[in-house]
Length: 114
Image (cartoon, rainbow, N blue to C red; front, side, top):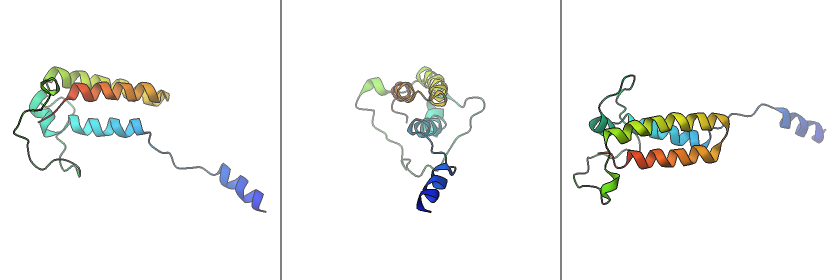
């Protein structure tokens, strides 16, 4: 009897878990729809301002980033959006390493949003 229950348990449908890359994609998409990203790049077609992030900062930083190369630009935000699409495709194909590499590149492009 125990082996039958183990067999049935093994065949039972399991919940689908989001990959860590899919979670990163969602996080960066929310970040790209934040007030800071819209301040840098403007409101893009099909996007809305997302507010109320449980981990979001509560006040705007007035000082410049310590690394000037991390300052966000509209061009970098646009490139990051295309990288997010590419990472989503890589994640759907199951190429975890490529997705994570693309996400790292997208995060670098976004830089320090206000």
